[in-house]
Length: 465
Picture 1 (cartoon, rainbow, N blue to C red):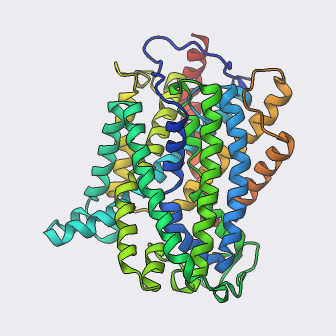
Picture 2: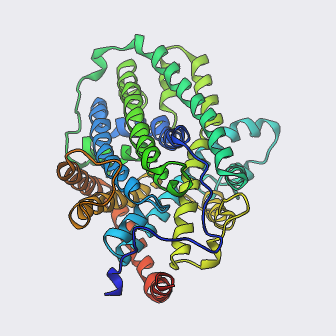
Picture 3: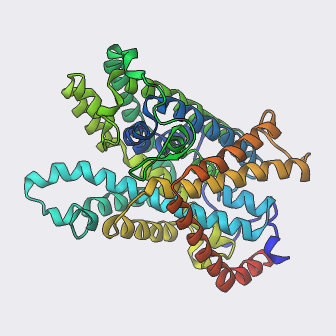
């Protein structure tokens, strides 16, 4: 039965493993918006349009609704269990150790791939600036593009990791400033492109149908296939729940941060999506790596396209900060629980987990710098969908197991919201490419081997101690 042993809701952390409480709800909202608004809306709207046509608008609605249900579940669990670790911790408390390990292992996959992908995406913009100055191409691109080491990607990861080690509040304050830059850029896109809206660009609205289907070229298409990829653009609010132990008033601030950032981003995304497919025929920007800039050039506004690209270079590091922050905290809690080496669960005099932040940065820098990356968004989505299902299930289980436990935020219509969240995430998982599903299963098989061979006994000793 040790496989299903559960961690108590309240744990007294001693011996230099307590994080400093420096964040308030504005920091958390900015952290969530910074992590959510990034490469997803800047690039995946083109991928989604390629799969769903103008009905990519509906794909955004579906992905956003499922994420909203998960966000409500996260808000309740975060205020009930104000501890770092996000879905991993909630699963440990509500569902048992082996399930918590699978979720933690899945989150490691998600966060590592997201950080690496965003770093590579950022380096693409940086490379365009460095190459004319004679910087070797072999050092600005990864092996998949014929280079040796993606130095800009490694560099930006090192910068963000250094900022996180400097202090949580300091990094959160800078993050808020850069988030404002991103929001201004998206607002400018809507203001410039919306006057060019043409309803004729919306027909045919659903050229590839609703359910996932495979086209002759082997690509999964349809509204749900697009939603399964676009889902990548919405998550990031879960990084807020990893900051529970660093929040001054977690009972209030966590719910505001999670729900507030999610609602705000849904509104932003819908405005951008409707503007994009209405301003230019979707076939003109489908599968483009820079669809919003392409749309602005397509309507004769190249200056604004340049402004949008420059804003992306300045502000994309906020996504790195949000996810690198979240991953380091999940690693930290797993180490504190004994599932990873306990020596990593130490904090600096400023109350930040320096050791685990360095380790996390090194791991994702290796991925971003020297490994070829294909279908990253889809594989990262698989880990996130598993975590969202676990949090919705944990919320429903704790409603039955501990109905009177303190909850400063209660999910409205919890049985309905939880069921929609679970069913929606499962459906999206099976709408992902088949190869992605296989890779996800193989990743977790490897993870379970690590758990049974190394982590299980040590976790039991950590809980007993």
